[in-house]
Amino acid sequence: MKCFVTGGAGFIGSNLVDRLIIEGHNVKVYDNLSTGRMDNILGATESTWFSMTEGDLHEVELLRSAMEGSDIVFHFAANADVRHGPEHPLLDFDQNTIGTINVLEAMRSNGIKRIVFASSASVYGEPETPTPENTPCYQTSLYGASKHAAEGFIEAYCEAFGMTASILRFVSVLGERYSHGHIVDFCQQLKENPDRLEVLGDGNQRKSYIYVGDVVNAVLSTMVFSDPGARIYNVGNEDTITVRESIKVICEEMGCNPTVKYGTEPRGWIGDNPNILIDASRLRDMEWRPETSIYAAIRKTVYWWQYENVR
Amino acid sequence: MKCFVTGGAGFIGSNLVDRLIIEGHNVKVYDNLSTGRMDNILGATESTWFSMTEGDLHEVELLRSAMEGSDIVFHFAANADVRHGPEHPLLDFDQNTIGTINVLEAMRSNGIKRIVFASSASVYGEPETPTPENTPCYQTSLYGASKHAAEGFIEAYCEAFGMTASILRFVSVLGERYSHGHIVDFCQQLKENPDRLEVLGDGNQRKSYIYVGDVVNAVLSTMVFSDPGARIYNVGNEDTITVRESIKVICEEMGCNPTVKYGTEPRGWIGDNPNILIDASRLRDMEWRPETSIYAAIRKTVYWWQYENVR
Image (cartoon, rainbow over all chains, first blue to last red):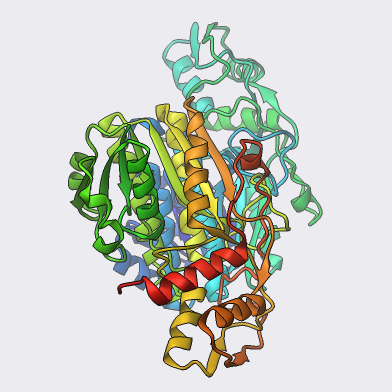
């Protein structure tokens, strides 16, 4: 298959790119390198099956021509920063919603019918748990709103133009090339000062995580369908860890014992869902299973961040 | 209250404007007159409580300055044509989603905290019926996707910036100043040739309608809440009429007896939900009741279209 991967130099995108090449696919990466890094695809660039266009989702003509001849689009480019949404309210809309519209239009004018979209469990807002895919969504963050808006247009394009979509709603993803979020914030703080850690929120937030290798497995599992329409899949471990517990794991891995200063609020920031637990039975029914536990995912991430992150 | 009404020269918007003035409010209309008409607000313009800025939602600086000093924004400007979405896929996104983002940003920079948003029951796609507000949404039209995306950003702005929103999901609205949709299509066809009527779809689609006066009542009913957050309300009669039955009513009202040619598909067009029936108990619990039946709403609309529509 000729695969077009937006955000292919990013954290999740580059892990997907490596795997697609291993599986024998032709891969073209489209990335503006704003948060993506060439380091992430150093290995991939050595393959003859790999090519790349450096470009932004807003360069619509470049996007359209770069995409030409592809069989499938993996749309992973996004602003992935949930926490700072209110500081620049148009950013999520611009990057994630308009960006997706531009991808859909480029697909339409190229006659490309298949898309895989990296969405987020944050589209649920603060739902009841465990949360299956048919839970009503209420947006509590600009990031969630931008992803959910993109999902809706993907669904409508499937209906109007006979496209096929896999929409994957990820919980927080961890693993090699992880670049943002509170695990990396903690690592950064502890590197600067191993004796003190400041935490947003009271630390009792229950989070779920998923290892990036399991995400890539999930993406490939959804390739079995090719009839028109959009299918939505939750992707996450079906257990949780509190922020306090995750700090214990990080500190063990980094060999430090800081004084931890917690905030007083149950939420660390606006849009922080303090209780994440998804129901992934739709993917489980397709034989997908996470192979890496939350604890192992955190350990792998911290190890990578300490010893292999060249940034 | 100082009320700012986008789309205030349009069908629903102008009916709301008249009522707000009657209730003693100060009203400023913001309309680009693309589908809105000055005729619709002829009465309103005679009031000293009325003012107007002719402008487009994309003229962000004009929008911001026109809105200054308002207490509440009624955001009713939209592209309301569901059927032709696939012919110009960016139009709904541009008018309805970007348009709403621009309204939210203008509110934020003016410190305005209250918004009423004219959404649509089409955001449900093809849900089970009767459909309450907490039904999961799946987008089957570009119009629905554009409105649902706007809803999500309104929710996120409420969360991030302490705004208060009423989001009203209307079924098809009928009444004086009605300007588009299949009732007007039928009237137009029968005016040109009273002996023949062509119908998209097999005519067995079950539709619900609501009279515009009942919509205005619903809008005002939701004004009781002022704490931050977005509340969603279905607005519609809780019964249905088939397209075939509605044709009978129209023909009676117009005094004609045409040969009716039906299509073969259960849907008239892409995104046509053939079975609309909403659950309006959330508004009923707030003492709102539709005062005009579906049959009466159709008759009033046809009467107005025949004898009072100056277009």
